[in-house]
Length: 253
Image (cartoon, rainbow, N blue to C red; front, side, top):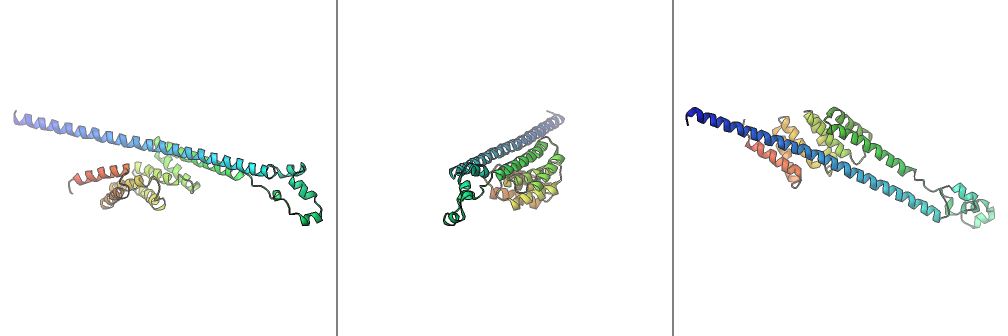
């Protein structure tokens, strides 16, 4: 083969290798996106299951309290029980002398109403709807609406069980729009306020990614190494290790 043919062959091989690497990178990105979507679906199902469990507990508590009132001889309406000759009626019809010698029936104490659990359930349902709406915007690629929705959710329901997840997806919304500094703040807030959250490994991983995008290489590498140290068995640790390997293979500048 002539020199020009060899050069052409080498160039073709290099081009093929670049295309193969690009294809592999695209496949990896698609897999990461699919995994994020699956994680979102799983957490939605988990939260819905928790909601059903909470509702069941509330219904059981309501039924238990009603049964206790019935055992004491007081129905849902104490006034109705009094008119029917129940313990309340006996207490009201007693003379002053008899009242001094007989203690008042315990049934005269108003029984608690199940209104509070119903309100709590309604509030949880409203919080879940708000969270799902923001998450739906995120999956649709509408990151502006997504970030706005998660911010409003955090402000309105600061004590909800999904607040830590909301901070993570808020950071993801900003990360997707290259607002890395704001993403860093969201991820750091999650890690400092909710260190036991299921999203902590992913938040620490994305914190490292964001820092690397901001050219804060030392901080980014430190964050990725922290993922390996704190969550060695997590999927985030695998991704952190891959990113660190790629960084180590890059030529020094």
